[in-house]
Length: 321
Ligand SMILES: C[S@@+](CC[C@H](N)C(=O)[O-])C[C@H]1O[C@@H](n2cnc3c(N)ncnc32)[C@H](O)[C@@H]1O
Ligand code: SF4
Ligand code: SF4
Image (tube, rainbow, N blue to C red; front, top):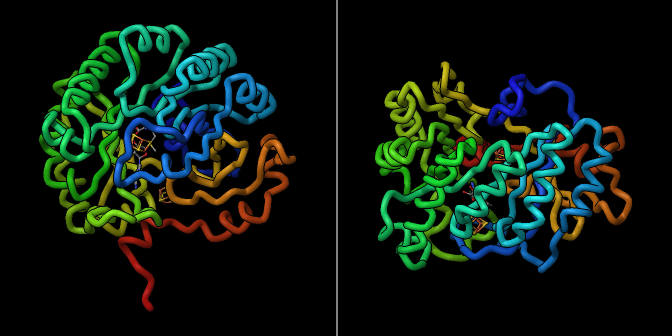
C-alpha cells in the first residue's frame, strides 16, 4: 500500500475486518445547510476535543487513518490542527473534509505544517451565481471557496475536490471536471448521492437516475485528463452490473464503512457510517472499546457485517416487492 495515497484503505481488496479508519465528527455544527446532507441535522451541540480524540486513537493499534468530517470541522479549527499534528507524529494518515468557506491562507499553512495528508473540499458548482442560488448564500462565498482551493494547491497540500453526482450536477459534470482541472486540482472524487431519511424539503431526493449515473460516469472516464485521478465512490457494489471498469487513474473505491472504518460523533457515540448507516453501536464514554470493537462486535455491528446492506445499491436495484 502506498503510504498516504488518497483512499489507500479503500483501494485495498477488503480482507479481514479491523478498525483501520476513524472518521471523527469533531462537531456536527455547520455554517451551510445543504439540502442533501443530514449531518448538520444531527447536531446536538456536542463536540469532541483534540485531547479526547487523541486519548482514544492512541489506544487503537490497527489504526491507519483519521478523517475529520462533520458538520463543518473547521468551526473547531484548533482541535483539527492538534489532531492532525498528533497523527503525523505517529504515522497515521489524515484527511480533512470541509466545505472550504472558513479556510484562509494562514489556516491552510498551519494544516500543511501539521502534516495533513489530504484536504477534501466539496465542489458542486462552476459559478458563483448557481452556487449562491442553490445554497441560499451570498455568491461571494463561492469566490472565497475558489480562493481557498487555489491556496491549498499553491501550498502543496494534496487537494481533492468532491462532486456529489445528483440532480443539480448531473448535467454539468463536464464543466465541473474542467473547472477542477483549471483550479490545478488533480484528484476528483465523484460521490454517488445517497437518499437520506430526512427529505423534508421538496426537491431533495434528487439522486441521479441510473441512466444519468451511467452517462455521467462513462463521460467522466472517457474525458479524464491523463494527469487526473478519478475516484468514484459508493458505486463499487454495482460497477460490474452497470458495465464500469477500473483502469489506471480510475478507481471505484471499495466501501470500508462499518468494515474498516467507523464514525465517532461528538457525544462519544460510534456510528457504523454517518452517511448511510447512522446506527449507534455503542459509546466510548459508556464502555465501548474501539481497540476491541471487531473482536467483541456489538450486535448492531455484527448484524451489519452479516448483511452488508447498501442504500446506493438498493436505490438503483430495488428488490422485487
Ligand atoms: C457531511 S459533509 C462534511 C464535510 C463538509 N462540511 C463538506 O460539506 O464537505 C461530507 C461529505 O458528505 C457528502 N454528502 C452529504 N450528503 C450526502 C448525500 N446525501 N449523499 C452523498 N454524499 C453526501 C458531502 O457532499 C460532503 O462531501
Ligand atoms: S454537506 Fe457539509 S457543508 Fe453541507 S450541510 Fe452537510 S456538513 Fe454542512
Ligand atoms: S454501504 Fe453506504 S457508504 Fe458504503 S457504498 Fe453503500 S451507500 Fe456508500
